[in-house]
Image (cartoon, rainbow, N blue to C red; front, side, top):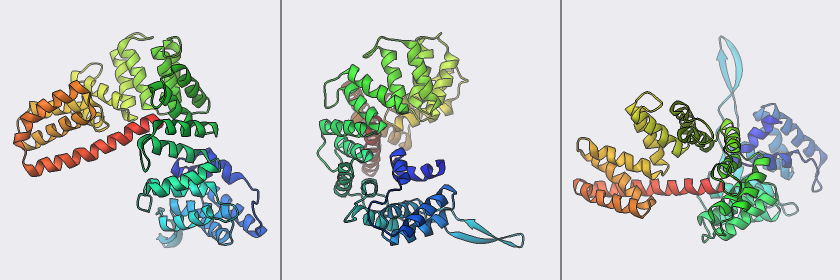
Amino acid sequence: MKKILVLLLFAGIGFAAFKYYKKQEVLKEIGPDYVEIYNQALVAVESEKYADAMQLATQAAEGGYVKAQVLAGDLYYRGKLKNKIEEVQGTVKKKEEKPEPDYAQALKWYQMAASDTETPDMLAQYKLGYMYRYAKGVDRDYNQAIGWFGKSSQQGYCPAMFEIGKMYFNGYGVEQNHQKAGQFFEGSSKSGCPSGDYAAGNMFYKGIGISQDYSNAMKWYLQGAKRGNIKCHTAVGVMYLNGHGVEKDYVKAREWFQKASDSGDGRASYYIGHMYSTGKGVKRNSYTSAKWYLKGALQGNMLAQYNIARKYETGNGVTYNAKKAYMWYKKSASQGYVPAQKTMAIAYTSGESSTQANYQAYKYYLLITKLGNASEVKYAKTKMAYVKPYLSKKLLNKVNNEVSYMYNRILALRGKKITG
């Protein structure tokens, strides 16, 4: 069972897809042999005999069994495994090669299942939308993506509703509309997706597209936490830490953060480090805070990365290490944290002047003008005026293109932090 689930997680489908595959009802008239062949393919997948699974799934798919068509599409998407003959000390041994995706074949089978005249498959429709949304083997096409997501959501598939919500939230292929995004997030939640709980909670918490309401935010976060959404665990901890919608309770905050951190959430690890750094609910301890900041940094949280960088720069709670400080500042800056970008820019302008140093400083100051608040933007523009004369027109064009790429990537990351 666990092995089948691993196969299905390529598009973040999770248990919704798993339940789908375990259904054995025959939804249309079809030869019983193909149903049995499909079931044999599932057994082969569970046993990690993917080459056999591919052969069986394709056979049933060609016979018109929709579920087998979806499974065949998944196997091609994940990668058709081929048996490779290799000699080992004079004997012949079969070895399965590393899978390589065949998106064209995956697309063919998904389209066949999604367009079935009697029982168009909602999972195949979702996966087609996913391929077009994220340019998996096809050119990115938001119109196709939202079209297929829409068909899937009409059949009640909650991951499709969630993806439509993200498209409205970010304005991808549609006019940006936070209110509609919230409606789709709530719809996906009501249909069983914990990711919808987190996104809906964030909308209420931040007042995006709706009036700020901490009580409603807490309701969505708690529901998501009960369903196992780790980011919701962290969000509940933040509510208790700050006393938003609930009475401030550092003990409960720590408990929620601990659960999320143990499951890999860097934001939760950051907050535990913050509690030890500020003495909130625990005795202030620089060494312990550094330990948690480092854990959060390794888990990818930009705030933790910035704070552990400061620790290495000052030797507070850790051994002084300028190289590690630089590394973590750079990682935090690349995720869009303005204080880290400012630190990087200052570092490049504080040393010996060179074209490369001026280029890097200008890059970070330019990023700040796009991401910072009014005072930060004013500061960055003043500093850019000093650096700009040292860069050629060619280098200015290059840095503008690089910053444009970084900025779009950071915006995507920020959107993901809201929607999960």
